[in-house]
Image (cartoon, rainbow, N blue to C red; front, side, top):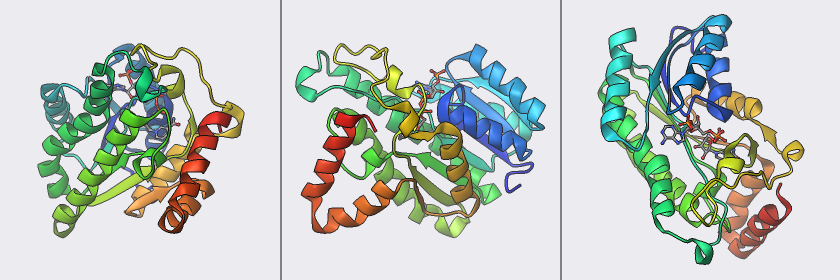
Length: 266
Ligand SMILES: NC(=O)c1ccc[n+]([C@@H]2O[C@H](COP(=O)([O-])OP(=O)(O)OC[C@H]3O[C@@H](n4cnc5c(N)ncnc54)[C@H](OP(=O)(O)O)[C@@H]3O)[C@@H](O)[C@H]2O)c1
């Protein structure tokens, strides 16, 4: 029950890993500010959270809009009086080779959601997190540590998140604020179906072997365990744990593993 009465801003709370995080936090008695664009879906998640015993506030937010991120922070403080935890989870992926991209605006958009969205929320929440000696959680990806084919723009946005949050960790250490970066491997959620294809539109199907990859619930559980202990990072699969070391001595082998993972969809 590490998050009992803990005021948590959670972006990307309408579905997938974010929805699973919301449920598990509510079961621990957290007070949640749920953010995403789909207000109707957020209301559903909020109702489920209240049933689980948590408090839930719905704040429809597009994280690519700085002023909406500022408003998310203001509304949370107005409702709950403080912010203990910020979870930067909202994200979007891609499934296309660079040479096939029809309009580079889609790669810029990935950067706006994954990187700038996290930066805006963190900037505005920071004074409150310092007051609470709170926690910042950034949901990155295995693509934040190594290259993955068909993910150029996504990997770039996730590498950017890591640079940002690893630097911030040092800045806020003396204030008692912890920064936990999560590195999920493939997770079963709607993200892959929603991944941008070459035409900049959602792919519309999931190329992964969904029954062979981690569930959103398991991923959420690992994230919350790591954040509760204020760990620096949460690396979730044996493949990525092994890959971290292999990259130091045989980076070409890690490239081969990444290529095979995309080809096999697991
Ligand atoms: N699934 C995986 O295999 C995997 C692997 C590694 C890392 N991750 C990371 O885990 C996080 C969650 O992914 P997921 O698998 O749960 O994906 P998902 O099921 O597609 O959920 C993504 C969430 O982000 C929200 N979102 C997207 N664009 C947004 C915007 N502009 N403003 C506000 N919210 C926005 C979506 O809500 P709305 O559409 O309602 O706005 C949704 O709630 C992401 O950061 C992703 O990169 C996922």
